Image (cartoon, rainbow, N blue to C red):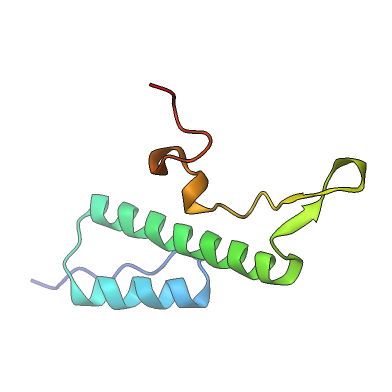
Length: 92
């Protein structure tokens, strides 16, 4: 019986994420649901890297209203997250 072929990475992944995909599927026997999770992880990695690059280019602030400045929508400080007790945390 021949082994199943190694699944190829989705075409839209970055080269780094595609390499991670390939390394992972060669090292482990993955079922369909594992491959879906791996794809989501690779896509999330690519989005984080793209946001990081954009923040490096544009900075942590953007022009705000009335000539002010505002925090970039790409910047998510962990202290501001509701699950970390930040300003948007649910009131109890």
